[in-house]
Length: 174
Length: 246
Image (cartoon, rainbow over all chains, first blue to last red; front, side, top):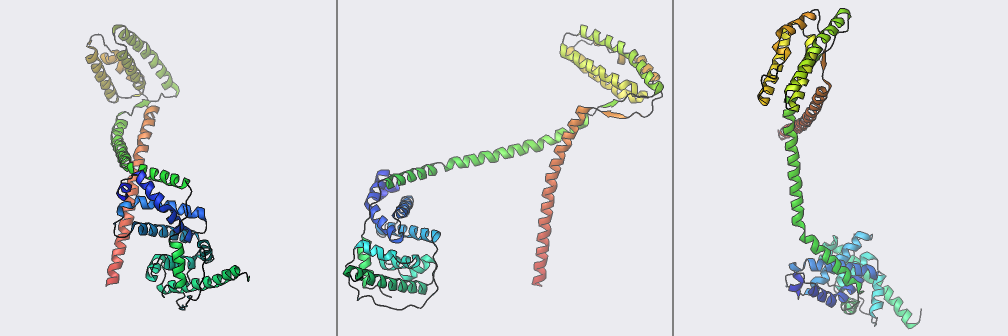
């Protein structure tokens, strides 16, 4: 099917789109709060997928390759349109959040992530959800590795605070 | 910094999340893909257009630069000097007399030639030539000055004769009767240095030629000037480098 899509077979392209579009829109939604904007970014990223399909080397999974294109598109958009300042703060604390046990829905988790500032959100998504290493994040965003670590630490702190608030809301104490 | 429990929970719930896009999203993507394919198909034509424009510019440049040279030659050959009629006392009266003497003769010859010649355009040329001789004659002082014009007329007449192949019918009283030319000279012996009048049409063509030449010269001068400035700048830079190295 991928080979057919490389040859610009529109049916094959549509089949790939139908299969992966919902998942890819979910990826874009992690980074961009506005669903319409997330959809626009997904379409632009799919355009890049189909125009660069001949460069796919079949080494890793096709979904992983597409996912990286989606993430790159979202980061490019955020960096171009939103003011993000990464403080060169290399001091970070190893904190454990393992004591938090809760069963949040997907929408609640997305709500918690949306509370983060753009810079923290990007680094948390890249590290915690996509599984990037700090070195990769640093080279992708043009920051120091230490800055990436400290931003992640700050993001986790905010999330912990928000989770406590949400749990309190669930328990009816707030 | 290892991924902790919260990271794992978030990843598990978000990594497989699906949000269905709008049905119109595929239509938009389809349109974008179609436009991209059309763009990819057309770059060969772009090169053709570029090549055609370059060739066009070269052709215009060749025509422009080759056109300027012959214009100069034409300008030099076509200068016609007309003699101004003097406006003082006896001279002017003598001129009028002279015109009166010459006019009937020339008119007669024109009439004769028009009757004899079957072809119309050649007759016109001849009459024009004769009129030119009328303009020239009264102002020339010596016979030596007059000779070139008479020779020119004679030459033109021989050309006309060759074309029409009727040498007997083309008879010019001015060239055939040298006595009349001498008489004309004698009528007007006291003329001083007469001012030269330039034919207006020739003057215009001359000015056009000069304008074209001046534009060309301007372009060449600009190129030379820029080349010299660059050369001087490079020389100074090289000298400074040598001084710095030393």
